[in-house]
Image (cartoon, rainbow, N blue to C red):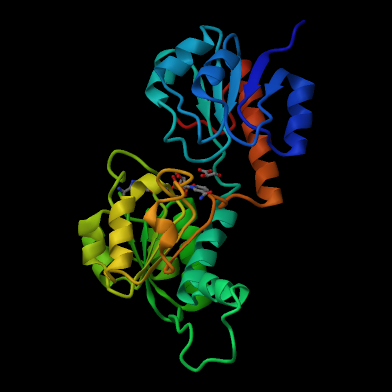
Length: 322
Ligand SMILES: NC(=O)c1ccc[n+]([C@@H]2O[C@H](COP(=O)([O-])OP(=O)(O)OC[C@H]3O[C@@H](n4cnc5c(N)ncnc54)[C@H](O)[C@@H]3O)[C@@H](O)[C@H]2O)c1
Ligand SMILES: O=C(O)[C@H](O)CO
């Protein structure tokens, strides 16, 4: 019997590739950058399953281009804001993602950005590489303490709560959070306090974004939000770049409305080389690497390929977004 046809939009970890090649009639896009839209639509034609990245727009056009035999869209990520889930559902196509296995790695990334921004680590590194460091400086590169500060977490889901644990348990921070529903367990374990978004902005020394990007959260960090924040506040975003309005963030950082930012996500990705955000010494940016550890990416591959196989067999997915 012939194997199901699958297209994988980027090269993933080797263990994943070995399994894909074993179980499916698979084509893997090998380039370092994603296929163009035209190429993508051509490659998915006739596929029973597609393994997608967050860089692909999966909409009606995508689904129609694939054809009626398409059974499953398996996202190699937990976030799936690039996928029109309703359009897939209408046609009985299953949509899977990879929650949980990347929680620790992403929470660590948020913390790495926070501590690096607070201690001006990248500025210091560049200072040395540019030959400017002459001697120990009593007034050089003075940053912020973390211990005992107030952290505001927007979206106390898996990653938000794990980040909160690091802040509370490791650094004795006061945890504020805004969320759609109360989290009584987190309130008890972390002495966390649920507040309105506006109050969180006003009271927090550090604000970290951990919600998914949806109609409500897209652009929620705009000029008005940054204006409410403390002038020395640090803004961390490891969720999605579209949750902040990037020109408003640039303004807030330039004018001293807020103190610094640490981003693992930008809007767009990557930022263009003349984007002002790249000129700011108080903004450090990582290339969307929250889940980029070996064990995490291996675990993501396992779930994504399980989802692919189960969806093609018409069985419930290991992790379904609906
Ligand atoms: N940088 C990276 O590499 C990386 C890695 C993993 C996840 N992410 C991003 O992080 C997000 C969160 O992942 P997760 O596994 O914790 O998901 P999750 O679903 O467990 O948590 C998201 C939380 O945000 C909440 N939320 C939604 N809208 C909100 C709003 N308006 N106000 C407050 N809270 C709101 C949800 O109710 C949920 O509790 C993903 O959707 C993805 O976009 C990024
Ligand atoms: O949503 C996700 O999982 C990240 O953005 C990539 O791992």
